[in-house]
Image (cartoon, rainbow, N blue to C red; front, side, top):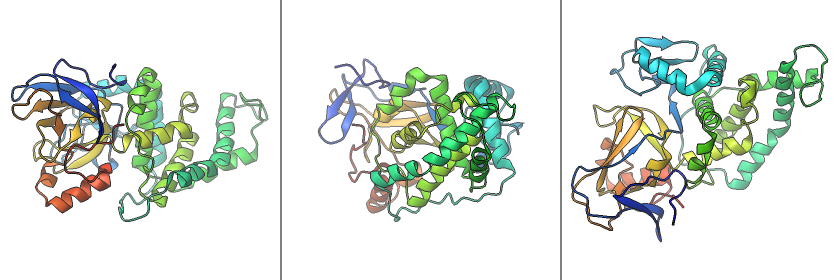
Length: 355
């Protein structure tokens, strides 16, 4: 049986189907303590919370204990620990990526924070039917915006765009209406990061879609509405080469496959007390959770290292903890609440939703 697209491979372990938690990682031989099992470098998308953009390097995620970093690029809205990281970020983003981040930063920086980023876990999560309806509802306005944007390919008035449609006041009003809606900067960053990864590395898209989808990825109806409005915002400002990718199917796929498979980007010196954002490393997502893990994970810049915590016997499942250092010290009930809310399972043993 071939491993799934994007799954980790090693002589030390194999990926198997389990009856209780989908696919999982199992040792194929006895593994001594502190053995490097896997290094995850396949970062697909990452979100640095906007409030930390001046303190956390946009490339390697280093943190200077709350101090502003010395290398700051206001046009794209990111800071870097040095010129090397800034150059690496630009190389990874590419020309279209730099244009996209510049357009989004221009949209955001003159607006006050109008959204509510707080998550209220007790609110009802929209079901799949309601999610489909919400995305369908913005379809008509999205179509008008697309026509207006296509008109930018030829700025002569009353000239049909690439689709053969003349841009009218109705199309331009659709753009103006979308731009007046409240902004959610971190949702914009989530979609831009994912779209650029898809644009720059289309052959790796299946690595994300091979992961278990969350059919209800939005925390509330307000959260769902914010994401559909973010879609309209992006249609208004993204570079034209990205418009074809900026479609509901792609954006919903990003939300569904990221939710239960992302890793927090935290500070390294204080057991992860500071939460800066999150990212998705598809290969890393195959390690299931246990409250008594036999594998430790550690972020090294943009990568994750996975090492055996002790002697691991052949045939044992290799499990990590999804909880931060502080969370691991909480009571059983409180830990179960975090696991249920963030990853959708009850058990204190291996239970990641990779199907």
